Image (cartoon, rainbow, N blue to C red; front, top):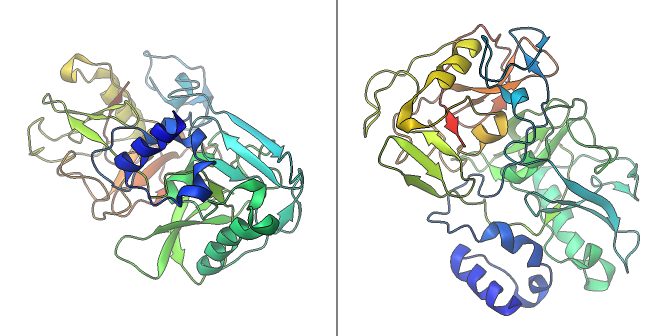
Length: 372
């Protein structure tokens, strides 16, 4: 059965695996690779974990979560462990190479080197060193030749993670660092490199800042921290959308259903009309009251909103075949910014930056709703 599974995997995702070296290490990743992809676009492409936010807020302070009632309904804190509970196993020492520690994400199937480059052991002692992007790529690749050519933790598929993979580690219910330190000890509250380049650029790439959780692009010659991954898709991941014919879009990779058009636009094939901006509270209320296609709607949390961002595209960074007339600008998520709770997380669909942008919740930006 394992041979059959690998054959199907290669046909479906057109991955460039070295048959012998990657065959033994691929079993855990098949579950989230076989997603019937219809494109190879740079998006989420695997199961989405909960953001980590467990508290509800008004425009400034924490409040009792009210579900569908009140002025701040159906926000991130109302939905614990939605879409899926966060779950990691590790640090786990390899049975033979006992100084090699890995941490597995049980939601995505990704296997991570537990420590940042420069650190070692189960508690990641030592100094996490910063590197240029090219050096970071080399460091991860070199793990494949360690242990006499058997690879770190007997794995030979180590590489720098794509941005969508790196962002799965961010816990928006934590800060400084925004990661579970039980599973990833001594993570630096600083930026980490991804393999994903800025669309249209050969000199800048995306990073994730584990001090705050933001994602921004920097020159490839800047110095950032490094964490390596294995067992991934070996591509910048996959999006797979279906137009349901009722002005909703299903993401087959995540099972989420999206509003095709932005708030203010007409529900038609081209999303005609003018997209409008609104405050965070009004965005929550708008999505709660939306009756499109007879579904129950809400404002997406930050992890859900990330999943439709496409880093191969820009201005806007989204597949406009399915989401026409999307604004190359900021869109609200339902996740409050933990460090400054008068802000909420949003994504700039011009290029894909994930930030709070110093915008008060009383500011006006764009809205797209989601349904389970």
